[in-house]
Image 1 (tube, rainbow, N blue to C red):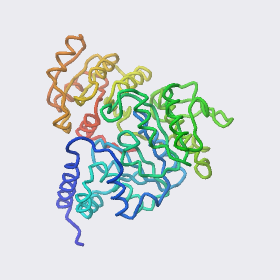
Image 2 (image 1 turned 90 degrees about the vertical axis):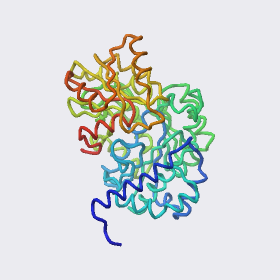
Image 3 (image 1 turned 30 degrees about the horizontal axis):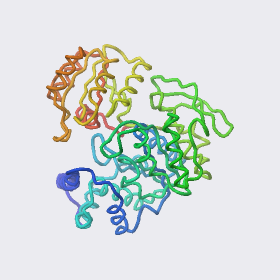
Image 4 (image 1 turned 30 degrees about the vertical axis):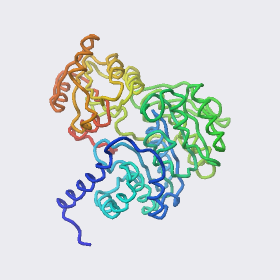
Length: 434
């Protein structure tokens, strides 16, 4: 096949993505039937390599990033599948730190478009199948796969993992997962499988118990639980990361992750438990964690490019964590926050949390926010003023960034992935840069 010129390739890529994103219309259609049929037609590529599978409301991205860095540090060829992306779709499918090329994405989507249409595959099902197929083609030695939504009926739950881990549970996607933390935990626990390692990383005793019972009912073995099978103590948060003491298997180690925040210690410990539980060569990687933890990177999470600080917070718990980290590290003041949240999220809780650390809050609209989920800035402004919060409304995203930058020593950009990604693109901060 004749190679396309760069402009033509770029056009073909965006056209292919346009058809893919058209599959996001309507309500989420959870279930494994379509993705199972799709992968079967592709030759079941997901059984060609071992998988570490991670779910959770908060912390799953950090745990995935930690596993990826440790396994790559050990010299393995590692596939990493995450969602959503910040700037470019290709960030979702990465092998040894290198995103799937635009040409490869275009070719895969074009080749399999008829099959995707015949099966009625959703956006996420198609993307998941593409990632798992790409990993097989690239002959990865292991893949680290992040759940998209929930767990039990998420498209990624077709994998048969070496180890499955569930991190912190919080309120999110309640219309699909349930209106209680116990119900949400039950859905996340759906990734636990018989004869595979199950790691319970939630620090709440009540939720921990729910997850443990689900893992045992599924026949997972072993079932490793934070607070019982390992302990995290003496957490110190600083500008260079988070240092903590890990007690596990009769050993005591002082470790540091470059990720900033109290819960990053627990996320790192959950990743280590997954490796430890898998045994053999994987446990050997865990034993050398101190050597390779410095290589952990997670775009859009306390991501510093002074004076800019990018940190996704799509729920109130996430925003509270952002603020805790800001206060622990002691960023320069005055601090202005640029915030945009999707209308179906708890934007009031997010703004209240941010107001604890910011002298000013600029609310705006991120350009890539889905039109049907854009928040009402008039409503936001009126509510914030009634709450006597330091709000300024600037509808235009570029003007909001410029205004915030003009009068602040630190500018926090937070809210949705769209908000952080749009800002990083405008400011030319590459998500995957080392």
